[in-house]
Image (cartoon, rainbow, N blue to C red; front, side, top):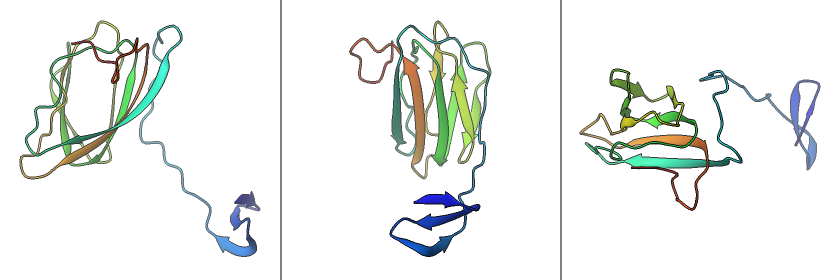
Length: 130
């Protein structure tokens, strides 16, 4: 597939025309400090109804997330708890900041979140320090 004259053409049939893709920025933050030699990992988190999420934890580097479905309770050290709804983003700087809440705010439905973390994992699968 190639972009030609602001239209997308299928590489197998150049006569097939489709509209160009739509890009929308859903979240942006200044680049936070990064750990040395970070690994970047994207995870799909599925929270059952009423799930408390993970216990309080830290990440060695920043994490950026997007709620795909449902609502998530979100609380970082020094900030009030807030609700992140489907279509909204969140981020945390990592380092010494404690992430207190990341549970499902809904008791009647599942919530799904995509999180991209940039950290030194040192063999830890989800790069969390409890």
